[in-house]
Length: 167
Image 1 (tube, one colour):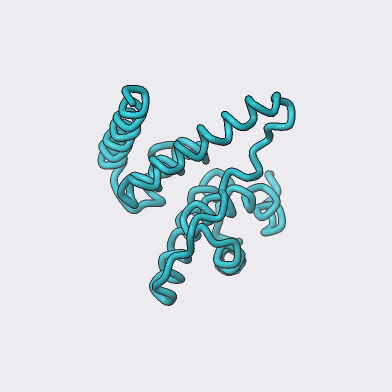
Image 2 (cartoon, helix red, strand yellow):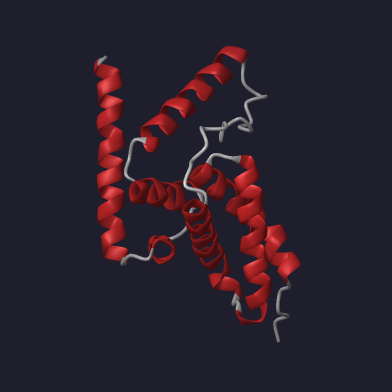
């Protein structure tokens, strides 16, 4: 019989991913800390009901709902706080590290110009590697609708890249 994982195990396994997702949504470290604490408090309330294979998308859905609640209560959004500052570029030459950071910043700027749903779909599937079904569940949409959202988001990002190349 497989041992049931504890909340500590879930926190250890998923807190960083949930933290980065919340940071992408809110762009404010203090907000992220509050929302992360609330997310795992809610997980604590339901830890007995969680199944190991579904816990990560469930935590993302809870984190998203916590963030939406927080956003409703505090109707202001803070400026971008450097989501990619921790990118590991130490092994690169300084000029290459600068180019990587600049490229990441450009990509983030392009993602920020997408609709809220497109941004979240790109982050959940592309960065946090949730399956399309899991990401659709987090966003509260059907997997078919998620595929459409992702297609349009990727198309918009490719268009922005072409505009830069054509300069």
